[in-house]
Length: 415
Image (cartoon, rainbow, N blue to C red; front, top):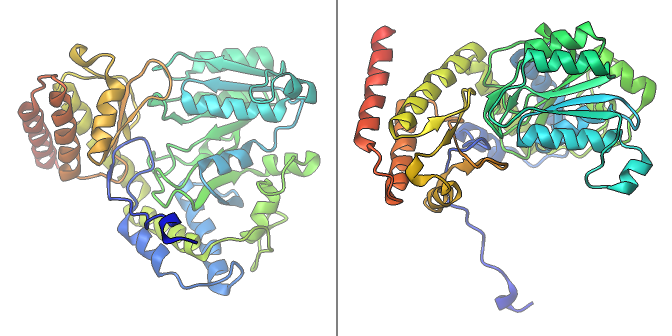
């Protein structure tokens, strides 16, 4: 091959990941990934690491579910595993209030669709056995909406995102679990944005039989490592009885490699897929860091710094519409209305990775994953103000920064 046909080595610069995810991975996680020795996927230390990961994950998620482990891949891999129990013809209610719960609902429609449904529109099937309840962008899925849909439809399954990153809204998990119990529905929850950030035990929500998350947000591991899942015995019994149309993301077969066989932890798992020792090492260290931080303390830290960012962008003239603690979703001041994507691109061109919303209406999303310090929040606000003003916003950057300083000083004094 001619040298001219060989591309130069790819060098990706360091950026400030200040969007909904992925967040900037901790240096200790990257070091664990890079320093892992070359080993096959059945080497003793790799398997030991996987056993320890599942035990740490149970603690972080607050569960006694034996079927708690990581699915190799991104958050979509974990969600695919979660939804694999849904079979063609199953009655399902899916609650949607943003981009990602919308993708969840599409996945559910694909899995519950008949051959005729898929033939009619394979990429966007509309099976009559799936009811999609759409809640307007910027609003949370609440108790009244959940109760009405489940009482009327009495489905076998119901699906909801806990935290909807597309719109930055927290949905009512307690109401969802309670309604599922009340109406004999098997609840499935997308916890991609809440695991490792919110302080909750999944065992406190018995109406939910299956959970899925991702490695790149609260867990703060490399995006291509493991997507956490957790299944109750009721969910597993359903899969045992009816099966699922998958080998790779089969909820029971996946678990065997993690040493979970017939509902019990065993000493050695059985082969299911080729796991990476590098990925196991990184995931292991990320879970260790989460436990060292402490779930309750981490949740308090996110709430503390999100409030600081929220007040600062409000001082710049923005209107915050979200209620998550790892992300603010905002409308720009009237002077910049309609230029959201332009502003985001200007920020990203300078190594400041914020995001627009991916559905209408277009808003701006600024995240604080792994940015839990006064210095980090100040840097985010300063960069954002600079780009707003470069586009003619005339925002009071100095006032916003002074407000941040007062906020942190007052919080320190209160402590």
